[in-house]
Image (cartoon, rainbow, N blue to C red; front, side, top):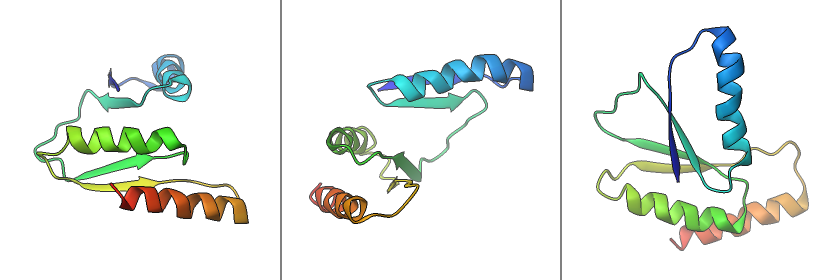
Length: 102
């Protein structure tokens, strides 16, 4: 996992530097966590994992759950699809089944 600190920027800086962060997130083969410099965590209560429903997401989710084991946050997995299809519904059902086995 790559953890990346992100500073507050004005819109012009964000356009140029923010695109670097976005590019890293989009192209990285490993999970990327971008943390704003202003972030403060007293208690980690919720974690959201954006999934592409790939098999490697399951192993990454297991690693994240293990990493956060002491905090015991609520863990949610989301997937955004542009259109519904039988194939996608089947993939979601299969992914849910694998998640339930964790």
